[in-house]
Length: 336
Image (cartoon, rainbow, N blue to C red; front, side, top):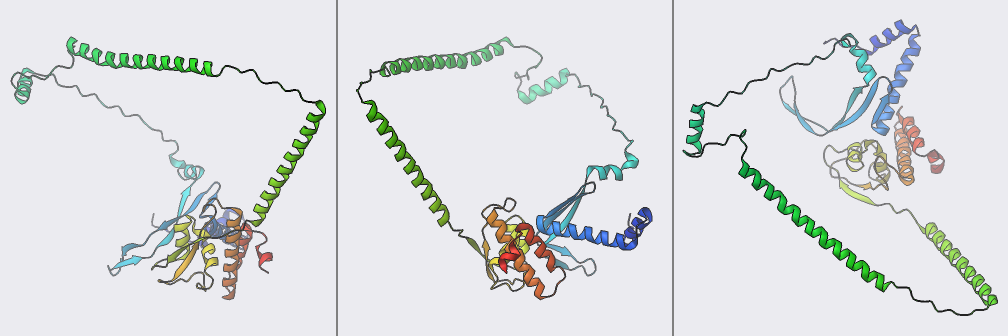
């Protein structure tokens, strides 16, 4: 079908079937679209129960042809939204064909032709006058005996090896028994008063050693400072913070972490130029298994993006603040 359904037609259809007002339906659809947009920016995929899954797919730079002029055009790298419907949705769409069942197709067996004398003569010419190809249906006693010999020889060798290993094992155990013969311990007479004092002193020494170790561990943990490392990247044509985050983190929505590290060079989050040298901060965890420090850094990056977009009075600036608080609820208080 070439007929396209517009957004307005969807709204009118929902109003007719539900009886709700146009204002309610309009706000509901826009909120749903905003939730899908935020989810794709944050996680790269959104799963709507009963409907399906929206997912981002990164498409590299590719050549295409302009259908009007016929000229070749270089399409820049971009994200493509893919929708995969759920099983319930697929069943509902194909409900008219659910009664159809599969049918087993029987294939007729083809009878193999019998070998005639003429074919044997032809094959004897190919193999040689006296070398007629053997018939697989005939049993050859000589061949069976050769096969038996081939199998019997390795089996005997394995049995001999096992016997040698068993003898070595028994011989070593006897040596151990001789060496491990018990020696009578030397007895010493000690006063009962001395033993009690010595035992209390050793317990005190152990306690002091444990306390020292705990203090040392506490001092080490207090002195540990988070040292962030980064990778130097030279911007090429077609690079964006989104594509770089997808390359280095395997998670494109983490691009504010790169913006956070390059505030001096990158004035607007959406603009980077070829030839620029920027830093790509490394993660402690991975793009899909973040640590607390990673979440704190990404929250800071989203908050800084919110401030940058706020300068240009963009309506979507609050969305970045909202996402920043999801990574760290106190990010706004820490920055004030």
